Length: 113
Image (cartoon, rainbow, N blue to C red; front, side, top):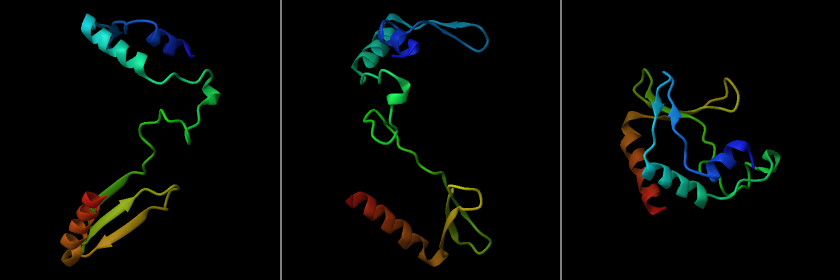
């Protein structure tokens, strides 16, 4: 267990020092709640090298490439997803007359699971 993890697991969260040097005091109840959360959390691997980003069940959020939505000069809705390399973005062009049907179809699929 890393030193920071040991400190968190072994007691209440200490007062934080803010960027301006002021101290932020955690209330006793805040410290207790935070301590309870750490106590209930999955035990971390013994060594950093044992952690596997592909299989560890403590991962809460998986990677997600950034996505953007905007209109081009023709009024088309552009959905753009960041590619793995520069100049490899993926684009989806939706014409204005099909935009509502497309978005409603996405929402329907999402609701249906």
